[in-house]
Amino acid sequence: MLKQLTTEEKSEGPLEHALKVRNALAQSNYARFFKLYREAPNMGGSLIDVFIDKIRLLALRNLAVGFVATGLDLAHITITLAFRNQEESEKFIRDLGCIITVTQDGQMKKMDCRSSIIPLRKAPLKVRRSVK
Image (cartoon, rainbow, N blue to C red; front, side):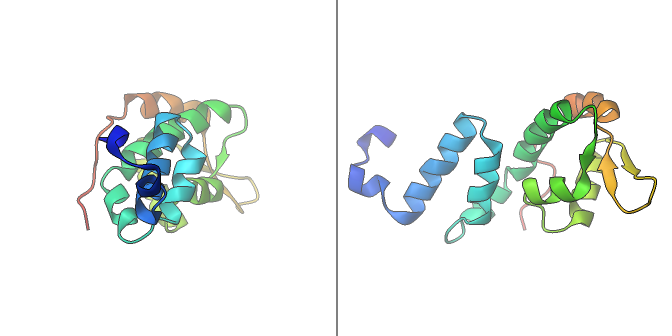
């Protein structure tokens, strides 16, 4: 079907965005995917909401490996994975079985990546919430 599209059709707003989303997922470029999710035209964001939890889990698995030594700031996760607020991201992470710690000064919450890698690997890749 993609081969049948003309260059002009591929450059139209919503279709161009959809192709960029497809490419970001095909390349496992999660940063690009979440950027595109935030700026989705029309009702594109609602369509992505159907499978966003799966993509967040895949991205979180990669982040946990990269930050195993230091842990990962919950505010960073919230922004990077396009959550609406920190409470939503914390609930998502806790539901996966990840460990969240508070820094000694009590100022920042962090995901303990070393303790969370195994629960993240065991978490099923499925959509967990209903479409709103």
